[in-house]
Length: 367
Image (tube, rainbow, N blue to C red; front, side, top):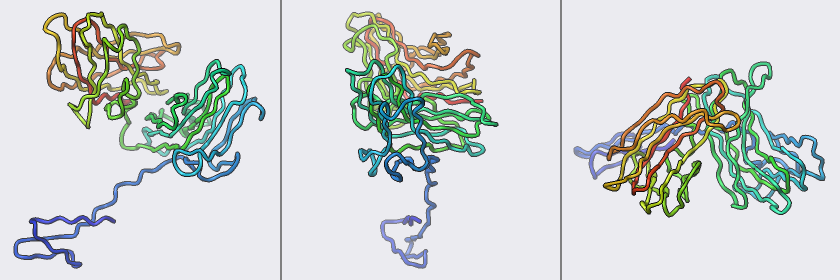
């Protein structure tokens, strides 16, 4: 247990008895409770136990592929420790879905899991028409009933070890959650996964958006976010980190540079609708940093639901950024019956120079 020294003046004495005094100076020994341990529900998430193709806690699914088509096992190439999980497609096929997987029993009262890992991928582009590697999850209910699955994060190609993370909402009635790390591809691809974690949250639902606080690197867009549409080049509209944050160390500024080019751009993040949960609360903080005296562009924000084909069911604006100090905006979202995902958007339109800042964007289930 950690011992913390607290004094009421600059002169003090520490005695084993616990409380001492020199004149008006008092010193006491205070025992501080250790912070609660972070419990990883994944067994052998770092793959440190195991050898060859035998990895305690993990199973491998190759479908109908044979040993001359797919390779899997322990690898000494690790992000942390000495080993990692590896899998590879050795030759082109029509389609392949192969993965390492593990199931976790969901404790009563668990609302969310913070899922994360380190991963890397290398693709033989000359022998591959299409490839994806990443981490996903699925949900099992009473009687082994299938409740659905979610793709979480993909691994970019040839960028070395990178962190992947996502917050997963537990659907009502879930008995087990499965974590999968693997490949979906048609060609020659190799991937590694390490330090795989699933940390439960019982006291609250976690933010389903990745990097909603914009604390992660911004180059050229914030981690987790993309330009869903952008007419205009990086010379016309950009995203920049800003030290003027509503919370944390940085926010983002969406900037139209006023080059004369008409800009219509959408910065967005899309997350899947969790089976059985249709209501969410969206909140964010925004402010107008600067705007041209005339012909300023508009910066708005809102959300859209999408169906299973990615077709937009409808964009619902929440507001126009106009105030010059941080303002909080909130909305209650009700997903339509055919919605499979929701996309949070920042939209900029116009030709005049404008800069608007955003921070602390949260999309939290509210069943």
